[in-house]
Image (cartoon, rainbow, N blue to C red; front, side, top):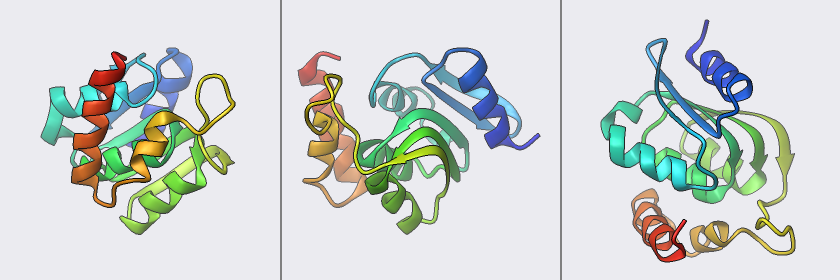
Length: 141
């Protein structure tokens, strides 16, 4: 079974929000919402993310920049935004999704997600990681 298929299976069958698989083994899983799980993965398994396969419930531009920052090789999302897909494609990261949406909305569904807004102000994955980590801390998520 491909690493991405393992990640997808864990995501869907174990009620997770994020799963990272490398060399046939699940090396990280999370139920945290938003980009919190990705930031936690970067901080806890760091270089193990390189060349890994990631399954996430929602991948917008913010998450995509964090995934590129982490040098993952492929990504699956239940829902992916066009902005996120563009970031991944431009970085050469293979992307699969069930639903493609124009943009990721906030929890109320009445505006663009605040992390997406932040991601629109940065151009590099390094800068995105710093800004999104700081925002996560200030939002207290």
